[in-house]
Length: 240
Image (cartoon, rainbow, N blue to C red; front, side, top):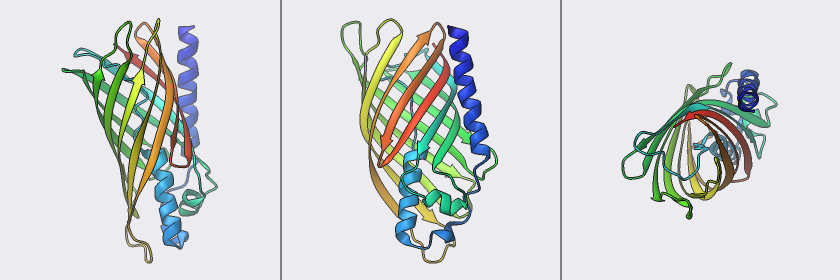
C-alpha cells in the first residue's frame, strides 16, 4: 500500500512537470490589450501562484520536518493567461519542492520553489504558521498562517502574493482531514507594456484536504478555491 501510494504521487508530480513543459513563456502581455484583461490575469495568477501549504493545522514540533514535492492544477477562470502567453492553456500545472520545519512555541515555517520547465516562470514561496490550539486526542488543532510568494524570470511582469488564513484539523489513526478560510492579495506590475498599469486584487480563499501518514511517509490531497479559480493539489513528503 505504501509503495503504491508513493508511485501514484510521484507519477502525478512528473505529469505536472511534463505538462508545464508544454506551456509557453509569459512574455506577450501586450496581447492583453486592456486594463481589465490585465486585472483578470492578476486574479488568475493570484489563485494559481499563491502559496499552498498542503498541511494540517497540527504543529510539527521542535524536531519536526516535512520535506517533499507537490503538484497542483489550477483551472483558470479566464483566458488571460493563454492570451498573454500565446497558448491555449486553461489549466496551469505547477510542480514544487517544499520544506517545512517545526519551531518552538507551536510555530512552523516553510519554503517552496518551482521552476516550470520550458517556461520563463520561477516561483518562490514561504509561510509562517502558529497553532493557537496544538490539538490533542480529544480536541482539534487550530492555526493561523501568513504566506508570501514571488514570481521571477518574467521580464514583462513583477508579481507577488500575500495571504492570511485560519485552519482547523483533527487526526485519527494517521488520517488528518483539515480545512480553512483566508484571503489572498495578488499584485501585478507590467514592465514596459504600453497601456497597462499595476493591479492589486483581493481574493477570498477556502480549502479542504486530508493528510495520510504511513510511518515517515506522508501523502495528501487538497482542493482550494481562490477567487473564481479552483486548484487540486497532491503531495508526497517525508514527515517526522
